[in-house]
Amino acid sequence: MKIAVCPGSFNPVTCGHLDIFERAAEIFDEVIILLVYNSAKVYDVSAETRIELLKEATSHLKNVQVTAHSGLLIDFALEKNNAVLVKGVRSLMDFEAEMTMAYVNKMSSHCKIETMLLPTSAELSYISSSIVREFASYGGDISNYVPKNVMEKIAKIYYKGERKI
Ligand code: PNS
Image (cartoon, rainbow, N blue to C red):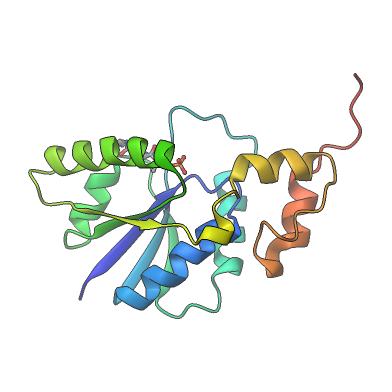
């Protein structure tokens, strides 16, 4: 059985992420969406909340599960029978960053862990979690950016109210 791991911080899950999960679910027997820690980021929404949103957003995908891991990504992938890491790429900037991580993960796992990069669907390529956070924090319309069934929850969680200049 071939397993895919889709890692990320998912702060919050977007339509771009969902597109990658759905495509990975067609290719692999099992897909594990893995919430992991990115040391370059600060999170103001808990891992539990982000996991809950991921679970609801992917409830229609029968071979997909959601979990979290606080260590190295390759250790998790090695434990899952050398699972393939699946990531979406939106741009050349993403590509460069993902290539570096793919090399590091491959070399550090003694060539056991491969990465598969899927180009984001063109119509979703401008969506990012940071854009969603910014829009939602002002009460902006995020309905085109996040999965429909969790849109209202995300809007409420990330709304910061009115701010003083
Ligand atoms: O969604 P993100 O934050 O861009 O995803 C980056 C992430 C979380 C996948 C990356 O930071 C990661 O793999 N973190 C887990 C710790 C780890 O294995 N670091 C080495 C990566 S080369």
